[in-house]
Image (cartoon, rainbow over all chains, first blue to last red; front, side, top):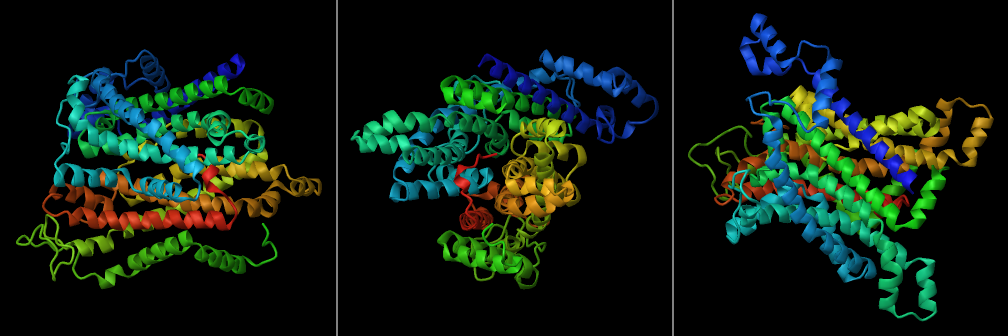
Length: 319
Length: 291
C-alpha cells in the first residue's frame, strides 16, 4: 500500500510540474511580455531594454522558468505586472476567502447530497427519486451565473431576505462575510449536490442489486439492517473520489459565482487580472488551483485506498 | 453493434424513432429542433433591428409593441433573445465535432498503441485536467484575446482533451477482443484496424459523449460571454444579456428571465436528447464519472 501511495504522490508531482510547464509555455507564446504591458506605448528602444533588464526578461527562457519555478516552490510568485505589489500578498486573503466559500458549500452540501442520493437510490423510479433526479438535471444544466442571478432576483430583490452582493473588503475577518456570503454559498451548494447525488444514487442502486444484498434479503435480514450494514458502506466508498472531483470543480465554478456576487476571492481576482492582462497574477492563480486540485485528488486516492482493501489488491494487480 | 447489417442511414432513422418513443427523447429533440429552427429563421422574423436603441423607452415592461419589454438602451428584448443563441450555436456547433474528432482519434490511437507515447500523453492530459472548469479557457483568452477566431479553436482544443480519455478507455475495451487480434494476425495495418475494427465499435460512446460535451461547451461559452470574454457587444448573446440586464433586475426582470429561459431550454433539451440517445444505444451514462 505504501508503494501505491508513493506512486500516486510521484504522479501528482509530475502533473503539477507539467502544469507549470504548460502555463509557462502559454505565456511565452504571447506576443510581447510584462514590459510591453507595463510601458504600453513607450515600449521601444532604451526604455524597453532597461525594463527587461530590471525584470530579468533579458535572460533565456529556460533560466527564467527555473527562477520562476524555484520561487513558486517557496511560495514567492514574484510581482504583479501592473503595480509594485507582490503577488503572494495579493493572493493571501483571496485564497482564504475562496476556501471559506468552498468550505461553506461543502459543509452543507455533502451531508445533504449523501442523504438525498441514498433516498433516491433506495426509492428508484418512485416519486422521491423522480423528484430529486429532476432537480439534479435542472441544477446540472443551468449555468452558475443563471442560478446565481435567479437566486438574487428571488431572495435579495423580491423577498429582501439577504443582501444581493458582497461589499466587505478582502482582508476583513471571516465572520464579517456572514450574511452576504449565504447566497453565493447556496449556489455552489446546489450545483455541487447535483453531481455528488447523481453518483451516490447510481452506486446505491448498484449495491442494492448486488448478490450479497440478495443473499441477506433471502436469509431474512431486516430491510434497514441490510441498507445500513450491507449496502451503504460499499455504496458510499466511491463517493470519496467524486467529492474530490467536486472540490476541484468548485475551484473552477467559483470564478463565475464570485464575479456575480462581487465576492473578494481568488476567482474574481483572476477575472480582474485577465481584464488587465496581468500575466504573472494569472500564472500564479492557475498554479494554486492546479496544485490544490492535484492535492485534493491525491488525498481522496489515499483515503479510498486506506478504507477499501479490495481497491488495493485490484489496483496492485492492474499495474 | 446489433444493427451492423443495416445501412448507416437506416440505423440512424431507427435510433431516432426509438428516441422519440421515450419521453426524454421526445421533449429533448423537440426543444433542440425548435432552437435550431429559431436560430436559422430569426434574422428574417425578428420584429426589430437588434441594434436600434430608443432613449425614450428604456427598461419598459412588456407591451404590445415590445412583448418582452426593452433593455437599458431601449432595445427590444424579444429581438435580442431570438438572435442571442446564434453565435453560441455556430461556434459550439463547429467546435464540438472538431473536439470529438481530434480527441477521439488521438484517444483511439493511444489505446491501440499503448507503451510510452500512451504513458506520456496521459500525463499531459492529467495536467490539463488539473485546471478545472473554464480556467484554462480564461488563461488562453488572456494570452490571445477574445473573438470567435480565438474562441472556436480554444474551445475545440480544451474540450477535446477529456475526450481523449473517454475514447482511449472505449478503445481499450475493443482492442482486447478477438476480432482485433484476428485482424492483427491477418497482417492489417494499424490504420485499417482503427478504421474498420475499432472506430465502428466506439462511435456510439463518442456520439453520446459528444452530445454531452456540446451542452457543456454551450455552458462554458455563455459563462465566458457573461464574464465579458465571449461575444462582443452590441451583438446579442444570452450570457451577455444576462450580465447587462442583471443590474436593472429589480426594474425589468424580464430582461434577465427571457435569456435565462432561452439558454436553459436549449441546454436541458440537449441533455435530455443525450440521455435518450444513451439509453437507445444501450449505454448507461449514470455510471460514468463527471470528468
